[in-house]
Image (cartoon, rainbow, N blue to C red; front, side, top):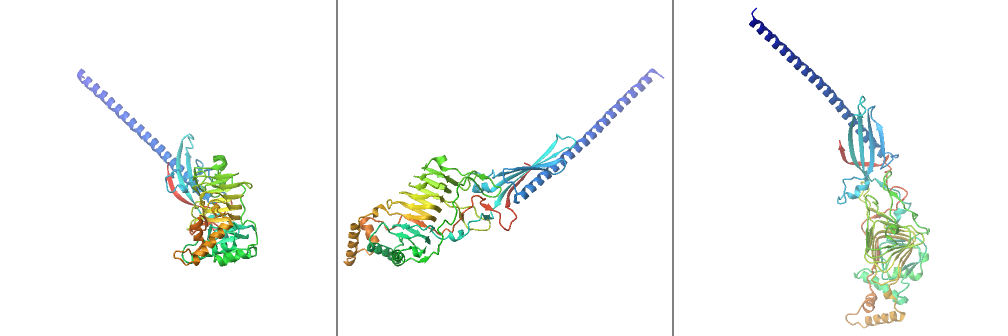
Length: 508
């Protein structure tokens, strides 16, 4: 074989080796890629499985959390619990009061304390590599279905109608110009116009003319609109005549035999809850926060810290100028007064959130006073119920003093004292009365027909009262809570509390 032929054969064999090696390399590369792809697929499948396990664990935790909230032994808000869904998956659940999406500008902000944010976190662990976990979170916001209020004391429903209810057998002083508008019940003897006019003739004519003005369509300025319920045996003959004959009131026998308070005054409301298992709220003590004299203050409920607006008073408290309070003031001390002596003072009880399925509006009291509530010279508006376990008194002051209680007064003792302008000497009253009668008999044009109008024109004794207590026609009912129990309770037809889901968010 020639040299050239041997060289050509050698080159061919070298190329074949290169081709074979290249094919082997490609085969190895494809095999590696295939193996790697299979490993990746296996890993993805494993990860996906753990993710599903974590989601299912989170769902299990949430379902258990929702069920527990409807049971009587629910641990409540601000608590957590954990559990296992499978041997490699578990859940952790937390309850937190409120809904952080609600801000102060949100019209639903008042619902904040009745909402609970539930967070369920599910985890799934790789059994071969415990440090590898999948996590899945579910957040649900639920709102309490307010089904019923805690029980009121026996007989409480019978106290809804009166504008004033006086339970103790103590004299009740009512001095014109004043007005109680709506039904009223007095257990003690009524002392009507005990300060002025003192002469029985002047008093009789004054009261008769107030009623005559009403009958002739000139407004009702009588001290009572009636009907009145009284213990008749405790009223003098003169009082019964003044009420029925002079003022034209409907007066009936109250039938009251007990002279004790119809409810029990709370000794100390250091805390309260809105519902079983709910957050514990600590009402502030006014004296600790603002001192014994309130002035230039606006105080109201805080959905986060004090949703009912409950305020405690543990000693002497004086409310002065420019004070606006929305909520319930509980004066706990048994030996100190709560006094109001300022201008532009407003105390209002807010309506409670509605009970599900009812349009009835409910309020807690605006005042619960263990000792005395005294109104001095001031301009005061109270919207709601005031419950006073000793003396309610509008002290003697100018007839320009303005006091309006639009709601209800329950009290042991009642007194509206005279206006200083009315403290005229008896001879002045006699002179004014004689002059009034004389001008009536003169039959001159423009003569004054009514003694109250005459005294207003000649002595500036106002006919229209600035001191008023009225039941109003808002339809609001007042609730007397048991502060030792949560305000809202499960309905008797339910096994536990009910909740409505407001929002559900997954894979946080």
